[in-house]
Image (tube, rainbow, N blue to C red):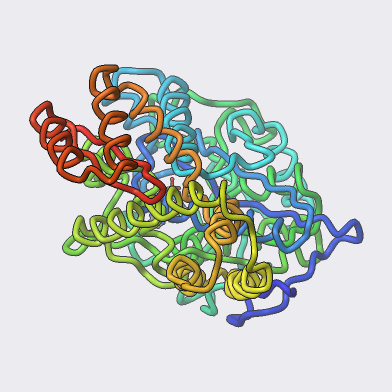
Length: 473
Ligand code: AMP
Ligand code: ZN
């Protein structure tokens, strides 16, 4: 089956083909800026990239996937203005800049693991690649794309005629309108800093020696440098959220192609934003929801992942607790069905292989067509409700597709079962006694024991094959 993906560069869904002769897909994703927790909006983008990663592999390709950690250089505006985000956080939390970076990097990976997001093959920190960035900037200077002005090194966007190709805007339109202060050192408004030596921040702690003086890199240079270092000169896919299109990714293209002298990345993919009903979720303003907030309220990380799947990655998704409750209900229902099919599957062998294969083809057809997750979920529910299909095949189907969807069905079922292992022995004895009563069709005794269990705080739900689900009232 062919894999088709939407390319922001061409504004169309295209058949995907790797560009290197070894057929290995090289994918780079912009990673987190680690000065605060990733919010659930950021995490939506990483869920999308995880689905993409798994879909590429499912389509039969080998994959090399790299992601950076921005632990230096990202100002509060994409356009080189504002304050240094890392520095602000360090001052606020009374930690060093690197302590802040490691703290939020660790939490980021805890959250992504909880959402069943696989770790990229290569994770690279900006602070550990500054020498590479300096060499990159030096070559841009040698190639005539960079100039020094008042101590800083700038990229000259006028030298790169394709500037604006990703967002479809010309350089004049890309003036970064939200600028707080005009940088009078720039030759063109869309030029951007490659290397700062004149620091606006007197306390700037992370600084390195360079041919232009002691200083630190601009934000955009890290992604071009590390993507090229780990993935080579021809990138297949570059991802990020839609906010990166107009500035960060335009700048990455200008830097990389100015450096290489040829085209760099063939397919650019962007995840739409998670929106709040009444306000913008903003990491720098601190008004956001984290995965921990959801878990504290009793949701599973997979409830949020399920919510993400209900909407296509190119559509914006409005977050509300009502939407999350609906996703959590659907998930609980699915987990219950998964358990039921699993129990039946042990006694009931596969006998609907054709149906299984048909559904799998439909499911893959939607996922391979630009990750159409809402339609793929509809196939999942058609399988759950199918009256012809054997439970064993439904169970096999759910296990198969969950490798891709990452809903953690097997994991959460095991967690549920281990919780029931903590139920006291006297309660388990009553449950067993009730089971015998039901086998003997002694319904009165069964009801009496159910009421007794309820009076002791345990709710019993009957499942097929005389199995029960016990929960604490
Ligand atoms: P940051 O850590 O701010 O650099 O952002 C990490 C990733 O999250 C980037 O790919 C952003 O484009 C993306 N992102 C930022 N805000 C949102 C949002 N509200 N919804 C979805 N993705 C977002
Ligand atoms: Zn980037």
